[in-house]
Length: 107
Image (spheres, helix red, strand yellow):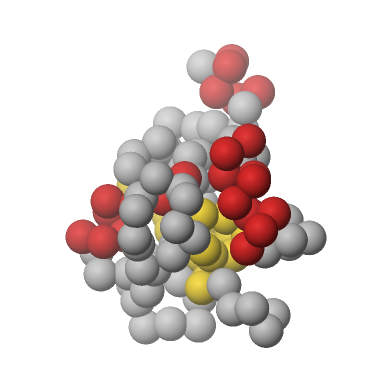
């Protein structure tokens, strides 16, 4: 339990919200496969490869989650340079409540 607290994790379910849309929030246990549930729950996020290389699921994330892996970071540097909120939804390790909005280049 001490390790979970130090990493900002808890035993409680995580809520994923989609502000600015009519999509309902979904509740998942920490570290569940986010991309699988977003597809099943009919979210506004689209997916392509699900391995973090196509960039189809590029989103902006509000909330505390672990940092991107080196591989995800490399893709993010190409698709959304200088945007610390940009993440690939298929690569997110869900550890807390978050809000997801679709990434738009004009932002």
